[in-house]
Length: 177
Image (cartoon, rainbow, N blue to C red):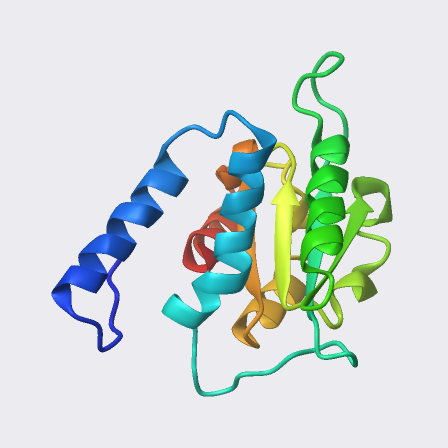
């Protein structure tokens, strides 16, 4: 489970651990569940688990910039719709939290060619296939590692949580999560 090192009461720690377990371990069966998970991790996660020493907001308008990275199609019609899922989540974030969040979606064809899309990102969300040689993160391990060490958050949806067997990538990936 999570090791929270903040100065919280044991009851608060227990409640947060239970919420994180329920959110992360329980299967997400609805878009609303996925949206809640993304919102929780992107907005609350850094304040509860993140580094307090360098709080910053990257966008000029003072909004948190969330970048969704959608993987290529991997299953049949209407199954594992990475593109559609990212578009839906980003749309909902922009419509309902547009005063504090700026969400954008980029597709696997844009990545690795354009690593600049992460330049001002406060959170990076992968929704793609995982595994060795398939995960989108493997195409920019060093740049992504530097971005996350600089304070950005990361979330992986569905199969994107599977890092694969590459030794360097797996070690970095497991440290990020």
